[in-house]
Image (cartoon, rainbow over all chains, first blue to last red; front, side):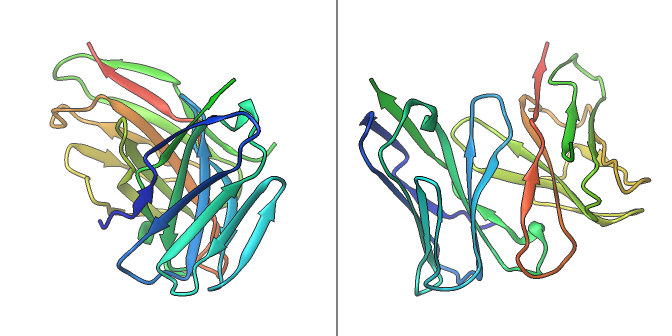
Length: 113
Length: 114
């Protein structure tokens, strides 16, 4: 299957800083999902987006569905130590089944005290 | 609590041995999936099932087999034909093929070769 281009691959930031990451694709999607994975655990769904231009927040997290439908962005404000982990994006077609989801390779977030 | 349960958390396989990873869900989801995760890589789809007694190959099905005899259960067998089985295996399920689809994951099984 196709891979999404997720960047950056890793981020080293100070506690309290804001974080931005994104995913881009050569294909159009109508669904974007953002997950966080802790070491040795399964990914946990953070935010789901279903409409181009949609901006959705979940606490300190905000994600946007790009207007071109080929990209999505995730921002974390005022990072805290528990934000450490790997963040994955996934693009797909709602109604097409999760077998049609394409995953990025992840952004590894590391917070320095 | 509703969720997806994978077991065991850690599994070791000897040469030439088949091993089976368990996945159970009580979310009443029709569709279930198995993914393989290697360090620094995205998730790769092994097999999926959208309904009981039916399943389809994903991108990397060779060396694996599955069954779907019950809606709640979707076990994955890693056969001796899979020459590089060491990986983190994730089971997932999703709501029926409707709009606003979401995919939920279990906590994973780490498989290692002895």
